[in-house]
Amino acid sequence: MKNWSKGDRVTQPTYGAGTLVEVNEHHTVIDFDEHGRRTFATRLVTLQATNEPAPHKTPTRKRAVKKKKES
Image (cartoon, rainbow, N blue to C red; front, side, top):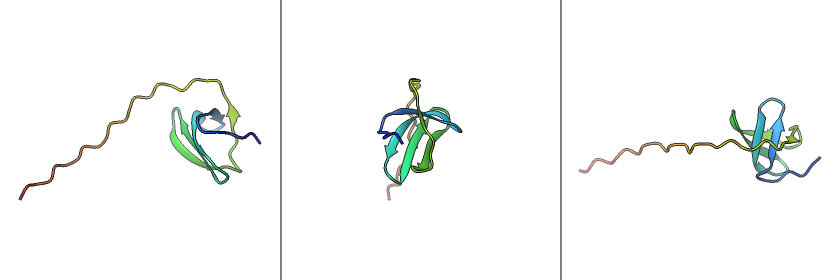
């Protein structure tokens, strides 16, 4: 089993290419290019290294905050 680290580019059979966000002995979190962030059990996930560069993601917009009424 390869020791993966945060920021590694990987590919997973179901979701395709992604970037590792967090890896520990229990969970592996991957931000997939086309499927968003997913969490896997580290001992069960099947990953392969890839040289495919990460796509440029546009920043997500934050939700608008309602202004409080003045009394």
